[in-house]
Image (cartoon, rainbow, N blue to C red; front, side, top):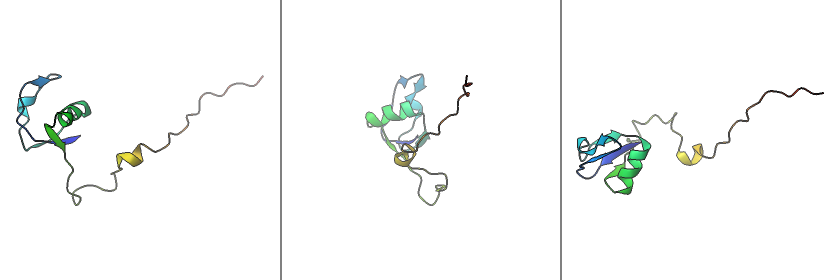
Length: 80
């Protein structure tokens, strides 16, 4: 997830030194760190301007979550 840091940070979480993240900069971080930073209001979600985003590969989460899964064909049972 891409987030913009909104506050000066200190300390570490899960072995990541938060002081390395600069206020105002955008970082691509893992989901758990992003959720922590967002919940503590230390960061905000960042979206690239629409002209730079590749819209062909962009699928909103609301749509992606609603896609049905394909059925997997398991081994066929022998009929007796």
